[in-house]
Amino acid sequence: MVTVSPSECEVAPTWTYVLQLPHDPRAARIARVTLRAVLAGHGMTQLQDCAELLVTELVANAYRHSTGPATLRLRGLGRGRLRVSVWDANPHIPPPFGERSGSRRLPVPASADAEGGRGLFLVCHYAEAWGGYPLGGGHSGGGGKLLWCEVGG
Image (cartoon, rainbow, N blue to C red; front, top):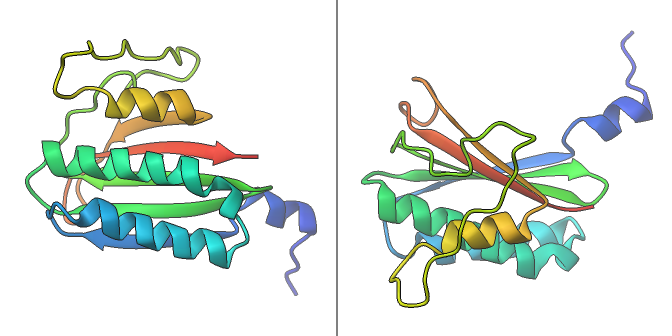
């Protein structure tokens, strides 16, 4: 008989939700509504404000820089931590998400008169950890990239 010790359960993710998002300007709002429901259901509403900002920016970035659908994954990591991941079909990983861990420097914020460029700066500023990596075939119908960030704890 196989048993699982409590220490093994604490290391593994406690839950994962995946939401397929169409290439639609309303996708960020739908992602926020889903996030609120998930956090409330798991008693993690203290993360709501920060997590909503992060989800909004990652999903909006996927909509703006990709032409197809995106996938949002919300993952409970235990001890009140949340990982947010967004996949899209565009293989370009924006800095600093493509840098190896250990070089977690914040990107330079956009100038005051720039029309964009603040979203990923906000993600890096408010998330406790972040990263990105390219994906080969098989995930959500193809390659592309996955950007992720973590909050809580």
